[in-house]
Length: 341
Image (cartoon, rainbow, N blue to C red; front, side):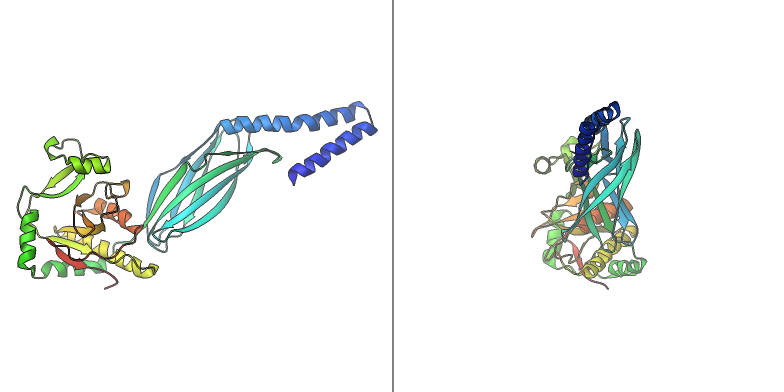
């Protein structure tokens, strides 16, 4: 519409010059012809000096609390950009719900603006927020240019809150008598539970680790340096599992909240506690950074939760995934925490 209106004005200017061939009509016609060229040059220069980045590549918030993904847009040219449009795509996992939004902001010359995307935090999830493109216009919206297609991404994790009510359940689990079968007890001994020096898990290489602890097959598989974790105590291992495959958000939230809270409070009691995770999930990704990994069977592995930092890493690993509870994993005291107690 703007282009059509300008063309009509240009035709009117030409007609005015033909009817009144004087200096004023000539200057008016030349100005109408030159103005689009000037605006195009300004747009090209501004596009070259436009910069955009994520304020943070990853944000974490508790369920029910505000969660925002932010992007920084800088206009480093001397020309203002009064019309800047961002197309933003948001995908929430594990359901895969997708939404699109458009944000229009003015960008003054030599200024940086922050674009904030507010995410709903009613349910635990992983949200991938992507700026698909940034489209800038000249002052009269005659010309436009697209920048940064699918290059900017922020991952938001909505994780469950710790519920003190589950601390009693953790104490109850610790007080229960050990009832492993003879077959399970033999498996424990084979895996090194209670035998100091045996391998009980894996983690990423840290400065100071011995090269003799390097696990070369896992390092090649995950393209990262992975080292073995040696057992140093005879503590019994708990394996917690929960069914996170439900399509009902409230039911899944309760299961994840109970799983993570019981794991955390067991760890506070100095128990050796693991949470089951399907083997197809890469536990060495940035979501699970710093977690100790124990290879498992029947398609499941286990991540160890020792403290608060492990709680956040494990919660990020679980919140965007959908999988059933693990079954039949031996060598642990197994506890299914599906649903609400």
